[in-house]
Image (cartoon, rainbow over all chains, first blue to last red; front, side, top):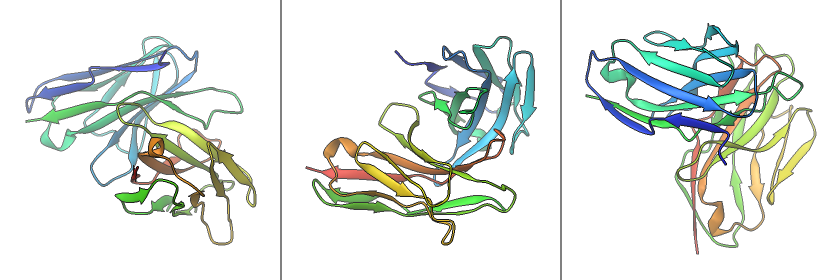
Length: 114
Length: 114
């Protein structure tokens, strides 16, 4: 069964509303990541975490918050959703050991902000 | 800066034909870059196809192969005879042992016609 799951798989949100995207992993990995992908662009890192109760900013953190309440769960929060945040969001996890650069991805969440 | 450029899609190939998806990289801040190919099948998350961490080495998986060429800063993906089940989006990626430094290409959508 899938080791990284995301919910919801798709969402329509209104501008200015709050959106929470959830990610759950059963890989027992320490590291977790949130990426977004826009049409015609590669994945870009928003936030990541290497331990529960701690998060770090990635390359494009503005407009996003992250929360890592446990090793298994990592949420991405859009406090005030904007049109520019329409994208596909991917969560990933990786091991802390020598294989930490191999990431395991969820299926993605398609977010449409209107 | 650090970046990855890959073949613009979509790419359409007939079954049993050969395939090459080009990937070139720029790694100005990563001393020892690792190179990856990920694949995303419809409805699923990205999954690692192959990974090479040493320049000059070749990685292979599921009939695909790619050689890490430091001189030409390339990591092209090749397959001698594609199958319909290879239809997917392929992503070239660049990373290092620092988990926060990970760069994806835009992805190349491949359709294999039976």
